[in-house]
Length: 89
Image 1 (cartoon, rainbow, N blue to C red):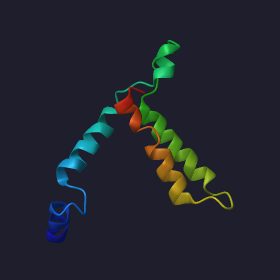
Image 2: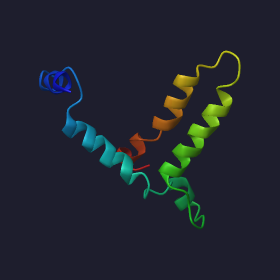
Image 3: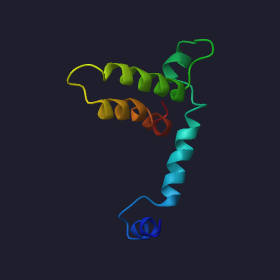
Image 4: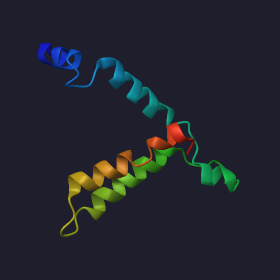
């Protein structure tokens, strides 16, 4: 733990403050409705977090296919929409 704190202080790691900021941003995805659904006036549109969860599950299933890197597939599925919170979906 001490080494983590020192690496963060040296700029080699992620600071606690940065981690909290990132997790706060991700938390907001639970209430950020997907813009395309809102534009099409879909009743009870899914949130960005709902979409990311579903994509993560789809990536788990698809990653059973030969030649697919499960780790990369799942990571990409989970993080692909995080920027939408910053850009406005």
